[in-house]
Amino acid sequence: MDAAALLDEVAAVAERLGDASVAERARAEACAVASHAARVVVVGEKKRGKSSLVNALLEAPGLLPVDVDIATSVHVTVYAAPQPQARAVLEDSGPDGIAIGLEQVAEYAALDPDTMEMAHPDVREVSVGVPSPLLEAGIELIDTPGVGGLVSGHAALTLAALSLADALIFVVNGSSELTASECAFLAQATERVATVLFVLTQTDKYPKWRQVLARDQALITQHAPSFADAPWFPVSSRERLDAVRLRASAPDRAAELERGAGFGSLTEALTSQIAGRAGELRDANAAWTARRMLDKLIQVQQQRIRSLSGDPALKDEIAAQRARLNECRRASANWMRTLDQGFHELSREVSLLYTRGYAKLEGTADHLATEVNASTATQIAHDFEAGVRALWAELETATRAGAVRVATKVAEEIGAEGVDALDVDMPYPEELDQFKVLRRTKEEKVPGMAGVIDRYFPSLTGLSLTSMTAHLVLAAVNPVFILGAGGAVAATMLKTRQTKEKTAHAKADVARYMREILINVRTEMPNAQQNAMAEMREEIKQVISDRLRTRDAELEAAIAEATQNQEASERDLAPRRAAAQVALQQLQQLAGRAAQLTGGEFGE
Image (tube, rainbow, N blue to C red):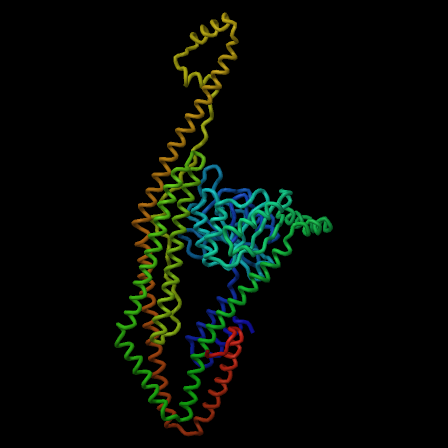
């Protein structure tokens, strides 16, 4: 029995026993288990072949755009679906987003290579669903922007995503060994994710890929030793996709290409090591939740049997429980003090995280300002904004995790079960979304000779040029040569001056852009995070208060039932006691199954 089926049965039993709250929670947990897939984040510098690799893994040529090499701040999640579909989540579209065509994925997920702007600047997420045996095995693939070179902001955004990932696919190719930025990224990734698969792509394109692979493995041992034993998979996405295209028309050739592409072992690793293991962990977590629910139901049935058996001590025990509950209510300041203290500590933790992240952003801005030129200005500006989003993602993750930790602690203190559902949204602050990414400066063409002469020798009119040419002829000097050489020198001077001017303008524009963003980050981000934390605290307070009222009603009903049963005849009590014993036996059987899934005896 898997965890989803176990939870469904727990829900059915709880419903028969009249506990609608447990039944609802068990069904919600069962749905979450059934819909969860292992999240596998695909990472690598641009032009390493990440999107081609995803297409090849899914045997879907053209699924993700491969010609767009401009990094974006949008990750593309590919999941299993019965029919091809795609959605884009926009700023105001709600969590479900809007439906888009597969041919629109590049439009919503990538920058325009000419303008360096998003066609839809308010897009936050793109998801693509396709039929695929690999995905149906329990995997989601998340294609990410490049992490190297100038894209430090996107690297930070990807690192934030790794906190919720089950595994990482790190993509390199056979052209050259790992870069310094790739090694640095991997060193940081070791703190976020334990499982990584290395994929070396384009083996068909680079005949010396084996030497590159050996050097890459040595670099991993040096810079990210935690991944030194991680598996490597050399593949050719082109050969895999060619094999897919030829299966119907040339099956023998397709089979030959498939063998050479090297995808068999990679697919097997994803299916068995990641999808399978994630499924086991997911089932274990869900089974543990089922054990807690069953524990409550078993206690209720045991108490009911005692009541139906006329146990004289039961009524006093229930009264004592109610007294303790009333004491908790009267001393609500106690658990609220625990709640306030927990959120105060959480606020300090998140504030420290923000302070460190902001300082890092300032350092990044200083560094990037020195690297700007006219051709990279827009890319740097866009990347800096991605770094800001990465900081917000870090704050959001830390806030949510901390709030759940505080809620669990308070609930354990007062016995208010089920305080773990936090639905407070943490939207990206609007004030940080008002900046337009800088436009790329169009290259100014170097003018022809006449233009150069007009720019650098404006005093030379047509008459003076004619006179100068005549003198050059009399001096036996080829005037065309002289003017041509002079024009070439002048053109070079003009090009150099234009480059310097554009670089100076780009540096000034990007510096101003980053300063404005930093000002808004400093004024808006802490306030937005604190507001979200305050809402979470109020939600937890309300949920705990509701749980206390529910528990009070349960105890009142138990006392009333015990009183009534003491006055009932044995003839009336016997069949009800037998039914309660049957229910208890069924619950204990389910508890034993849950214990098998969690690897321990129930009730430990």
